[in-house]
Image 1 (spheres, rainbow, N blue to C red):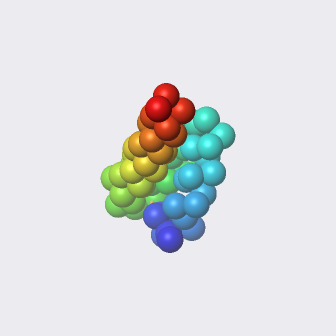
Image 2: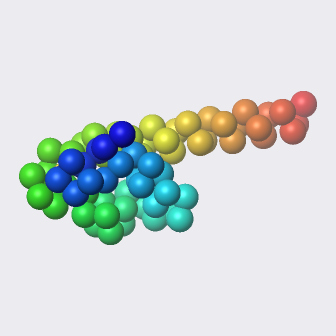
Length: 68
Ligand code: FES
């Protein structure tokens, strides 16, 4: 799904950048998210933070299985 229409940036592109270890600001700058009209920045940040939270929850679940 497109996050930034002006620059053709998708959620998948954000996720790929996250997997490369970039922080939110680096991702926005590198991909050019928000550098035109700017209406996408909040949604892009929300999307990246939701992915991060999901990944952290999955990791905790995996870790708890290893302990028990
Ligand atoms: S939608 Fe991203 S800069 Fe316009």
